[in-house]
Length: 409
Image 1 (cartoon, rainbow, N blue to C red):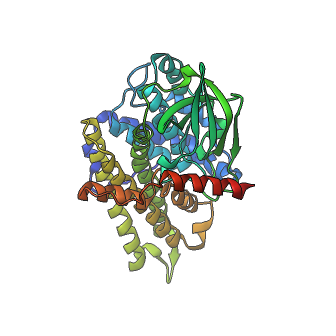
Image 2: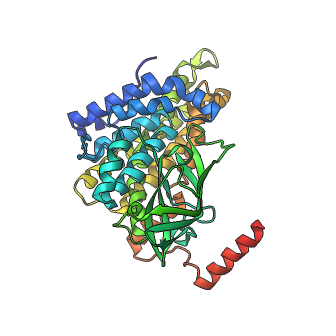
Image 3: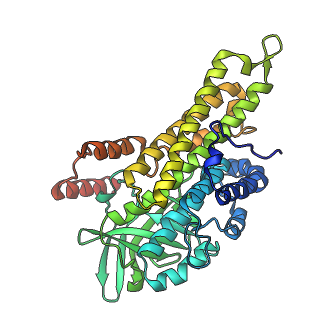
């Protein structure tokens, strides 16, 4: 199979450093050689290709922008290009790396104790240990502040009760970074696999992100030692800062999916002969779709690149990431829909990657902040006025909790 040619309509490659281009090419070759040949089977079987983890670790793809513990210490643009190429393979693959790096290694490295960092960071970087991030709950997604998982101090231990939902890597994780309320404040806890009172269950029957492990987490009087608390966490801003790291990777990753479907549609349109021996690429309606795709991908590339440069300068704000995540995922999904249209009936066959990317992007558009929520974040930044629904009063929240409990009975 020929190597992926990339998409560079506006000579954006001239804006990358030699190191950034080398990192991209290394991951691009890995995706071409080792991901593309297995990913459709993994998608059909609804299984994550676990055999890729050691190679990804060997390449330094987990925690690649951390400079300690022998990790690469890449800049954030190079890290973004890693996410781009991984998602060109599959959103589930990028999700795995994004969770491992941005949602597990990042909070442990940033908010953890020296002992926690020294133990977990090397093991997570090497792929010896897998992590997950427990924030979303069955009843709270866009409003994480409403979480009902709670923690109480009991002697030298903490006891967790509650549940989390739609957790990437949950059932294969060795450690879960779990967020729970204690006296009204959100705190982070490291819950290790096989801890009594901690159970997981797979979300099955997904039509999206099938090559990704998605789980529920359950905590019933789950007792963990005091040293498993992330000591620097004491508020909702801490898990939200982790999401900012992951959303940054998503904004780059979506471009990889967009490039994959655009390149597929372009090749197909030039080789599909119809109507008197002409390729369908010669028809105006098809050309219009391809022109739209390459234009939006180019704009997304420039947005992601500037976001990365600003992040490397230490000036990136969460609302900047919201714009890039919202825009790039949206255009990627529209590119996939346009590509599916160009391929006709072949657009729904997994002989081509289009329908897989299209279904994956339906999830990527709504996870880690829905399209609409990111619009509100951007609008709050420019108006200074938050427009989210106001938080429930304590009484209303209690009533909602009691109603949910009664419904389950």
